[in-house]
Image 1 (cartoon, protein in one colour):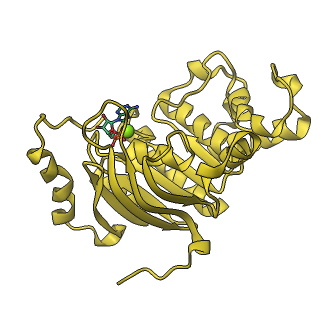
Image 2: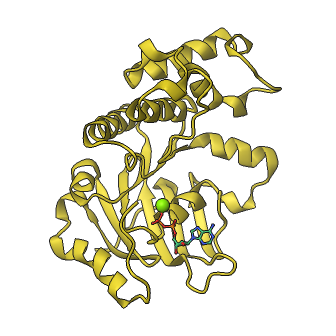
Length: 267
Ligand SMILES: Nc1ncnc2c1ncn2[C@@H]1O[C@H](COP(=O)(O)OP(=O)(O)O)[C@@H](O)[C@H]1O
Ligand SMILES: [Mg+2]
């Protein structure tokens, strides 16, 4: 059935997006159409090189598409410059596979860094932040179960704890859209489950739209509302998580056979 959602109700609307990187013969994205309603929890599922990161990076304008239109949170990010773009990026938070924390700074200082776009002037040290911001950062650390670790250096925390700081930093931005690029790929199964549970819980509490790349099928089916399968920069299936079939999943893998190079293992 055709989706008839009005664009104003969409958090993300990609229309026929292509992306070719300079010097690369094969396009990274080859005609992506993707409409994501607000409050949906969507997983991009695919092997390494299928275009998951490129898709996510278009959404906060870390990359520009080669062709096609994108609307994010009702705006056209491609038309933005300077302050407008910084404000837009406050509304779109990003959680990284390798956490991207500053290891020598405390957990709470890393969280506060998520709100830098809202402050003027350089900041160094906890006391430079207004008290209300410190309290708000502590509150986000509490939500991810790390209030007791607020003043510990991020580099000394476990991987799972570091990713929870990454989530707290993202939430501190009060985003409308949360992007997560393989957020559990560097974690053991137990930490992965904890991080995904937290992401699920906070996205529900805050009414967030979440787009997350994963490569474990079972985990994705468990976690998502909807799963979009990518292969070679194209969407090969797009279904409610509960309706994903083994044949769908096979499509993600089958495509690699037609390529000249050996398929890479998922990251
Ligand atoms: N900065 C870049 N420069 C050149 N090619 C890139 C760049 N980033 C990604 N690619 C290529 O684009 C394709 C899709 O990559 P990516 O989006 O990172 O896939 P995934 O996240 O699913 O592993 C791959 O062929 C990759 O080599
Ligand atoms: Mg990637």
